[in-house]
Image 1 (cartoon, rainbow, N blue to C red):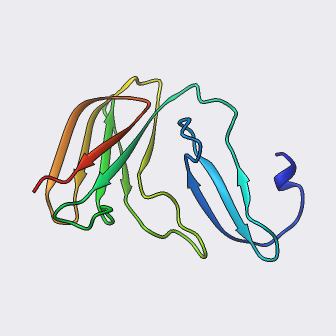
Image 2 (cartoon, one colour):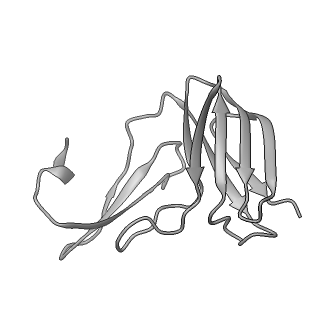
Length: 135
C-alpha cells in the first residue's frame, strides 16, 4: 500500500478532493501529534469524470444542502453538498462523479435547498461544471 500506510498512527480527519486539478481525488489526512499528510493520486486517470461546482443565489452561496444527480447510460448517481464530513476536517464541497468510459453525462440535475430544480443535458466529461442557481 505504500509508505504512508506502513507506520502506525492515530488519524483525526481526512479531506478528499482534486487538489492538483488532474481529475482524480487526492487525500489530506490529519492526525494526533504529527503533521498532516498529503496523499496525491498520481497513478493516472484513464476514466472520465465530472465535478459540479454550485453558486447559490436564492439558497446559500455554496449550495450546501443541494442534491446533485448525474445520469449516464441509464444509471443515476447522487451526491449531497455538505460542508463538514468528519472530525477536524472538511472535504471540497463540489460533488465529484466518476463517469467510467462515458465521454459525457446524459443529464445533470440539481435540486437546490430553495426547492428550485435545474437541469442540464449532454454535459461533456472531464471538466468542472459551474452552475449558478436560477432566481
